Image 1 (tube, rainbow, N blue to C red):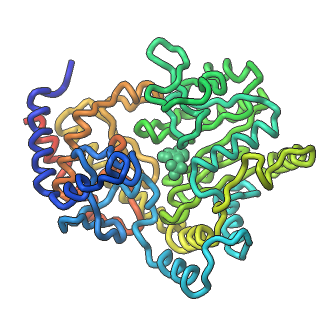
Image 2: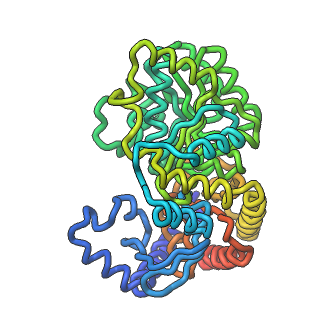
Image 3: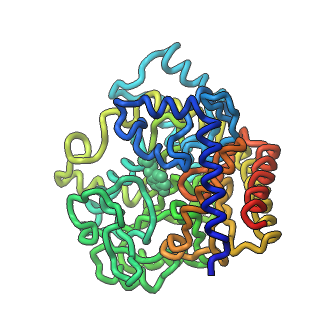
Length: 454
Ligand SMILES: Cc1ncc(COP(=O)(O)O)c(C=O)c1O
């Protein structure tokens, strides 16, 4: 049975939409005048915001954004993790001034000391010994998938249903409600049916994983250590260890995508839970929003790749691995500044404490109004879902989505100075987030629920 009075929810949503339009006149005009932008935005995803048009912004500093109509917003969306270091932290600004101004040189096809510094720091945090750089997590995943196929001589990969790893062709496979693997609904014109390149099972289902790996044709399992792109779906106790064992038994490699789960701590879930991947991919927040990405390889995998390279695979030119601007000097200077001075071990401790306060506030509201919802936390990241108990797989989580309810909550928050991600209900803390920010969200969220349920 539906927990809410739907006509009332529809009415409240309409009121919030009207308030949003009225409150954000300059942003609306910017959007409506953008005749030369495809879909009126610089990137089509920016139309995901619930108000019908995105906010335009004039400033972003730390955890705060000022929109074009002069409202200050507490930013818990943080560029969907790209700005987990906070907006324009001082160390990043200084590094960019040094690199671009004092020394000069954005992209050169040459190396410098920042590269080895960043790679060594990634090894300290994530354990893997060899690193290479890209400009996005998508590209890190794309290139690494080629390398694991090369190293194993196997053609397929395996992903978990409703995972997201960037716009990587092989990953758009889900299990539908009849239990079949199918191309993900909405997948834009794939070149080949992705069910021919990819096996898919539900997260937390070890039996299905073992069954699919037994075919012996999977080069690597590509997974986040906890799912974060269909709400947060945490691994059940023993699941990640079981994945590692199943990979070992079937000669399959294990890639952990830590792009979002970096929120779990300075070395992501890998360090926090002592995981043993063969490779890691990451991007987004590493450079504080300056484009960057990285993949790390175990010593053994790096050697296997090099053996194949010696037999003719081309990783230095037009073989399909790498990009002209990847590993450029600006991107490496940004990563050095962020890893060295912003997303430090100490910073993560404070961010996690705030996320714990955020999650307990949300839980208190859920309890007070006896809502059938749950809230999950992964270090500095929290997310509530319209299901209780919390979903254990991507499929379960997808079935708990409620677009109308999400839109209402998002707009209620934006209209009162709080941004949470337009993709589901994620809130992320950065080093500049304060307890006052968390408490402001809490009072707005609680009020939204009160309005809805009373
Ligand atoms: C887990 C994960 N991996 C990879 C990506 C791709 O990141 P980007 O779009 O910056 O390439 C995303 C994006 O949301 C992600 O969530």
